[in-house]
Length: 216
Ligand SMILES: Cc1cc2nc3c(=O)[nH]c(=O)nc-3n(C[C@H](O)[C@H](O)[C@H](O)COP(=O)(O)O)c2cc1C
Image 1 (cartoon, helix red, strand yellow):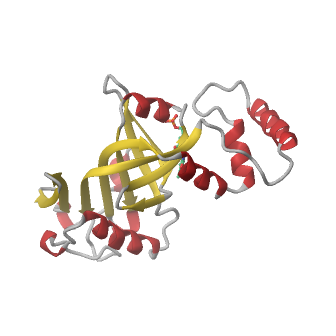
Image 2 (image 1 turned 90 degrees about the vertical axis):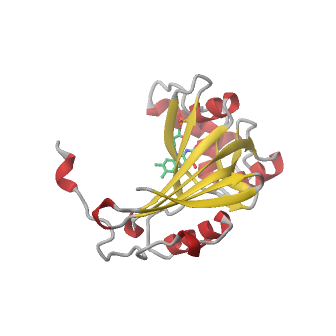
């Protein structure tokens, strides 16, 4: 298959907001993210809070997968997962990550990088309790990222957990919880004509956010 025939022209008047001026961006990248995220939420996208999460093991070997953003605030960006999954093991040995949002209809991407730490038990439990019961049972049944002999084996584990936890109460296992990425760098990207895209990078320098335009 030849993917080249699918070439798309950016900035051709479709939903993106057009030119981006770094000087007009908020000095605080979190505030700027809030503005773009609100636009993404209003754009009818399927999962605007879905983001690629890149991690690396202790030897620097990278891996990437999608996760869902659970919350963001001044202290960072939170997602939830199994602490013993591949990403979990990598984050334990190399607590750094990069996040990427791609909002295709807006012709925008946002990249966020920083250090990573587990959320508190209290916060993880709050995220756990916000999940529908079936998702909690599913997460309990799944030793995420480890080999499983068949789908039937997974369904049998779900059935036995359903019996063990017949009510609404399904306790959070210690192996499931949140991670918080505390940004030290953001990049906002807006697609423009002729591949002359706009890029604005923020970097934390001595406790202050510096921003600059990058070549596309
Ligand atoms: C849109 C989307 C959202 C996802 N959200 C999550 C999530 O929030 N947490 C999670 O553990 N896995 C999520 N997954 C599954 C992960 O991409 C991945 O398959 C899983 O976490 C195992 O990754 P690992 O083996 O690299 O640890 C999501 C997948 C997709 C496609």
